[in-house]
Amino acid sequence: MKHDASVVAAVKARANIAEVVGRYVTLRPVGGRLVGACPFHQETKGSFNVHPDKGFFHCFGCQASGDVIDFYCRINGLEFREGLERLAAEVGVDIGRVKSDPRAAKRKQERDTCLAMHELADRYFRHTLTRPEGAPAREYLARRQVSPEMIERFALGVSPTGWQGLCDVLRRRGFSEDAGVLAGLLSMGKNGRVWDRFRDRLMFPIRDGGGRVIAFGGRIMGDGDPKYLNSAETPIYTKGQHLYGLFEARPHMAKSRRALLTEGYLDVITLHQFGYGEACGVLGTALTPEQTKRLSGFASQVDLVFDGDPPGRKAALRAAQMFLTLGGACRVVPLPDGEDVDSLLHARGRDGFEEWLARAEDGLTFCVRVVRDTYAPKDMAAWAVAFLTGLGDEALRAVFIPRVSAGLGLAEIELRRFLGEAVSRPRRQSGLMAVKRRQALEMSARDAQMLSFAVRRPDYLETLSGQGMAEALSTDAARDFFARLLGGGPDELATRLDTAQTAFWTNAQLEPAMTDEEAASFYQDICVFLHECREGDRRRAMMDALRRAQEQGAHAEVLRLLGELQALSGRGDE
Image (cartoon, rainbow, N blue to C red; front, side, top):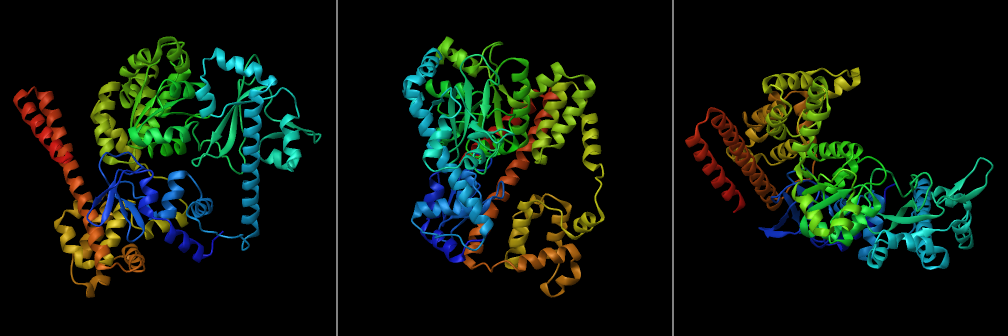
């Protein structure tokens, strides 16, 4: 569904992009723009640029870009329509009733109804906890040493033992049984009988990025199966996209840029109770790429605190791989066998837990150790190839290859050969896909941004070349296209470009014209990125030289290179 363009324009006019972005990112003025660390990928330097006067943002690190509505949707994990409506409500724009798309109107009505029912269910479960029928749950929470403050902060409640408690409450408020089933709060049998999905369970509300309850997790307090019962997928809840406690943890993450990721609901709550406000948890399933990306947007360092038993180590291995693949920094905290976060903190306190945090392993070190200790030799090699080929960043792969080969006892030259074969292995494609591939230039999104600028503002071509843009392009196709742009005057350009290059050039020309001020600002951003590329290349070359000097026992050369690296790092921090 598309909203009236006037509504979008009204929201963008009312919503100050600097103020909205500033809620999540610490920004500093640089020239006519604002710069900060990107909330959508791991970085320490400011690749994230906000242009308040033009109303857009872009990041040269991960290529995220757009206007204030795009940012709001992305940072809160919302679809465009929902993000537009929520931002409109925040800034006081009345978008009116949607009449153009009946299907979209129906979906909106379903979502609104589900949210209203979850809000009512949340109040009902919390109220039940305070009543006589909530006494067993209160006793259970006391045994688990959950403080009243945490009960309030995480809005804990209890579902009664009967079959119709919530069902009756929803019916009295005018909600149909079918709506309750659609919302995942009620269950329906084959005979059409409807009953409460959650019965006699401690209830944990699950919130979206805006703090609205969208699902529940229910834990049984005695014997029974399953131990945990989670909401099914509904119009407002998709499994694998949310993290328990992320809404409560986000303000703390914004300050520390750190996250603690664990498995159980009570583990998250206990971490908060002991002062670790950056804690959140997975929701009953294995960690997903969507959850990993979402958490990486808020934290530059993630500590994985999983159980110390074999299933916990397996889960930690998979999670660490996912964060490493994104280029993120992660550590794995090795809990004692038979202990979880909750039991460890209550038994040994914060000081005892800090001792185990101090023993945390670097994510890659942990992965390599677990694979070496538990995999057969053939499986070790297969894991190494799969992990390294999954890295999207070639520079990151170059850093990891020596560590993986050394840690697993694999010859680096052989590992590189296996990787080369895996990367070059042809993939079967349909004829149509093959034709489309030939018609499109192979380049990264970052390459496309810079080359599109070069096409739209050819007056910057020579200066871009002097800044080393050719060396920063990631593919041969991108470098060849840039060389052809430089190869002569504009009049004979058509004779120098092939079909794919001509298509790219045409599409770039169709983009809105850039004013001189916009072009100067964009060029400045490119220069910052190119400078960081050069510094990164120098650092990698020096690291390779340092490794060779260490292998050869050239101590004087090692000291010299270490000094240069330290000086280079110092200049980078200025």
